[in-house]
Length: 355
Image 1 (spheres, one colour):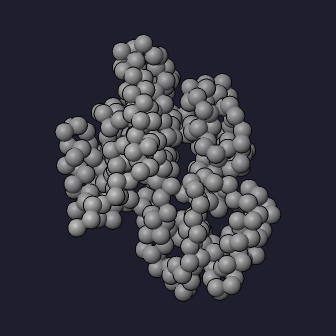
Image 2 (cartoon, one colour):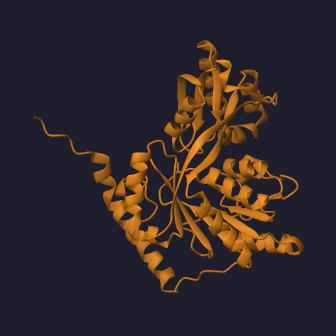
């Protein structure tokens, strides 16, 4: 029996992963010893992050948490890096009554969060402290009662009262390799900092049970969740379209986990006949959109994308117009927390009661 070939790329990248892992471990040690400063915000802070790159479902979880607080009558704010935006520095995306920036200036995920939560203050800032300080200056008379940090597990310069780590059930630990050799943002020992874990995108509860067992030695609550399809929406503002209309789709997206999108489309009963995927946050161009439209028309298919991707495209009226004319639609998604929801709600509620 011939020997299996040894993968060359991971071997070549392993030294880089070792160096990066040592750097992150040393940095974490400096924070734990108090040598690097951690700043405390004047209101409770919830961080939602992950330990791997892309595709864990952080954005739907941020959206769920913000809506939970809004239903409790709490004033909320979101501070995010705004990945993929063309701007720099701290900027106000939404003042809680009006969305001020689109996806090119705020980032597609942040623009979507602002649109979904119109009464929430939304800020982008590479340095989260600067984002919180902007809120303190601009909204001193109506400070939020809780701030949700988006994608901040490794951003340790600002203290958090609740540190939530979201894991993708399909690949929770990034193959055990640190960037660039694998998908880990830091060594797995960093998971010990988390207040609780949310194992997300579960489609196999037996596999999820194994992940829960692996996390058990850390002694932190483990919440189980999945992403379920919402509504199929027309991009030309004609409104909601039922997924039962027999749509044959040309699926396209620029996301970290294309298989998750395909799973959602299948769960919504949408027949995907053809697909095309790009890198996470990759900008769409006239050429790429034109190619999508031509291929969809040639095959008599309806272009269907993610809500996040549609927010990115809709900022460019030319590209949006091309897809609207082709009858493009986007699929919304909803967060379904099916085990441990009461634990998560209590931990979130306790923060604002203390605050």
